[in-house]
Length: 272
Length: 245
Image: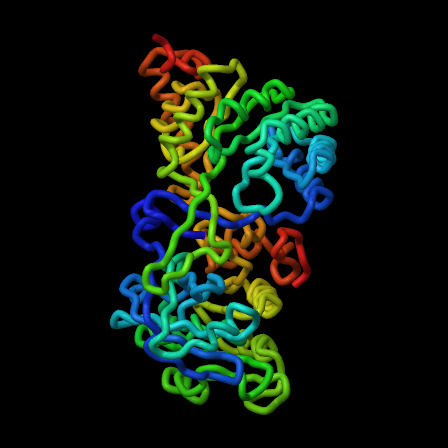
């Protein structure tokens, strides 16, 4: 990031134009923002909830001057955000971070929970360019499976696999389960993933065994978003600045931490 | 974190897992680093400063820097850094506890920084860092709310450079103590300015957000080229040069 960009992407306020309920715990917020409407899939923004806090969110969609983020209610800040309606004001800083690389040929996307959001954005951009696009999405239960309608529009019946832990929709298993056979059955030129880190770790292990290319978007506690504070460090990388998208080669360098531990609010290492 | 027009306002506080956990990181760092390691310490009392400093040194720190000037941690830092009496007590206690160089990072949020500098030097500080962030805030005009949930934070970056430079100049004018310049240093020109004002070394923080970590090499290379061009053999030769009459 150059000095001019950091000056350019400072906090600005914008009005929420639409709130969509995606699941009992996830809502999508759509806001006008010139800078963030031009991002590439994988990038993130810092969302300021006035009087509450600022949180990092990966971008779910961006076009025509608008940006969308899908947010799961997990704590104080997200609870306040979920209480906001169209017409109310939030702040945006960013966009930040790198993006998924565009791959042609045959691609596979694996999303877990709200990690599906940036992958939906990626799938929309890739669908016209790739030879074949397959998507595997997993959630705990049917109600929490996100963007099924949108994904059905991009994929066909064969190329969209859904899994739920309780078997209320699709296959009853973890999202990683159908992966082994899928990887053995079909050839992929690139695999993308975003979701809980334990899932990312499992996927990384499976792709490593087969020497397949992988790009994974990681999530860490973030405070500054611009590479200074160190809250989001994994190994020698800062997720906000060097990521959030990491290649298989980079994941190899941080495999002692991937899916195992992260830094907590006080900077101590806590298990994932 | 607020990205201001020419700097950053942060209210990180001092998130850390405590010296006992951090000591392991210090030990590990010493196995891979080939440069001296200075550990920044803070505490809520003079005794705590001394305890933490001693543990840092025992873990391998080559020097300790007392953070007595963090403006956004309640009941620590800034209060000590604003009181010659409190600061003197802290410095003496730490000095008695460790046998490595002791640096004191000063706050610019005082009427006369030389008064605080004098207290630190007389209490035994081996060097001073000038300066920490300036107390600051930002308000969003649309909602009328302070942007930081902490309301106030510390301003760093290019915005504070001229103030930091003046602080270094003032301290060098009165004391012989080595000074580490800090505040908005982004390129080699900034670094040289601080040397000329009286600093023997500089710290870089906010510029990492602007230029990423390559900024360190860019600054050292730029300083080298400047020195060659001006026929100086060592940075020592230009420290405080701006003070000549």
